[in-house]
Length: 184
Image (cartoon, rainbow, N blue to C red; front, side):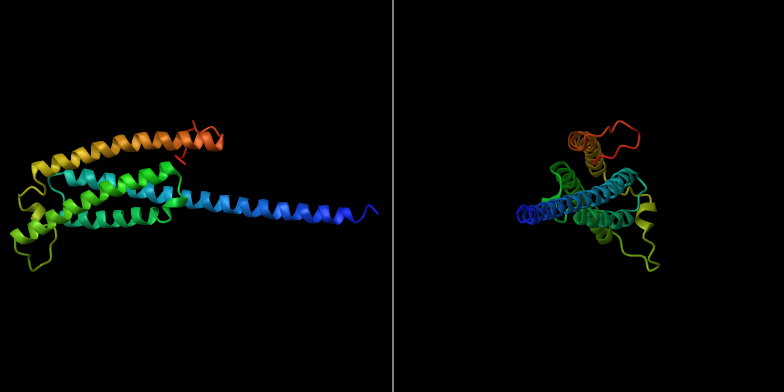
């Protein structure tokens, strides 16, 4: 007589285990998506920082910088996909850098448009003619704005890295004080 309740308990255990498995798989998927977004964010941030430094230089090629910046915008847009699934600190960091990147892209596009309208195109297709012709690639005002954006980005990046590391310590319970600590 005790054999009948036992199959019901086994079935209930299987159902609970199945539900737990589905929940763990969903959590693993979310973690994977966050890792992917954080990796794209790190790549885009490195490119954005390099572009900001290059744009502040007097002999930079604006057209090349614009092409790099458009790629950076695309990387940040890809990282922002399904932003509702991202951790708040990752989402905020990506949104901030997207805003900075968009502003830089717009300024570079305006600079390219201004140099294209003011000087006729060479028939050889040399894209460095404008930047090597003795004219500064950016005005002093634009250079100062870019330097300010770079300083703001570095400050924000430092605070967001600390916030992400703090979130990781709080959520993972692991020691991230090692040299290879990742912000997620």
